[in-house]
Image 1 (cartoon, rainbow, N blue to C red):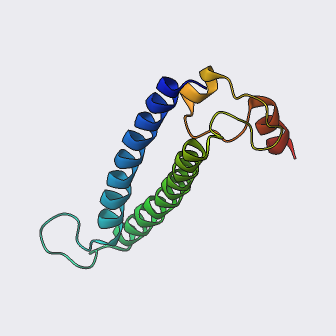
Image 2 (tube, rainbow, N blue to C red):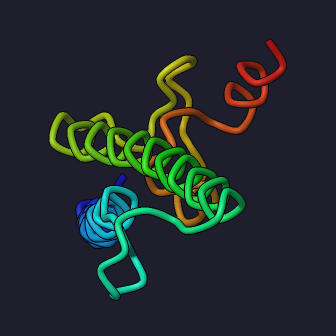
Length: 120
């Protein structure tokens, strides 16, 4: 892969990492904050409200986990750039097409190997 292309993907990855870090921090604050309505309530008044609050917190924590996994994949992609392995499939060492990298810049696998892993 050309140096200019690598720099472009590196910038995309850095921008995506910065955005996701901000999202994770915001979600973490929202999930852990009590009385998110700004009125100082620390406990819901109704049982239904308690259930909704619990659901929202669990949903947010699940999103944070997914975002955290994406951040790990982004970090791994940045390491691959530094090592000169970016754009090569981790499984078959084939070239990952630019169309795939444009859609998913941290993709470690070509489409064929990713599909094979997903199918078991």
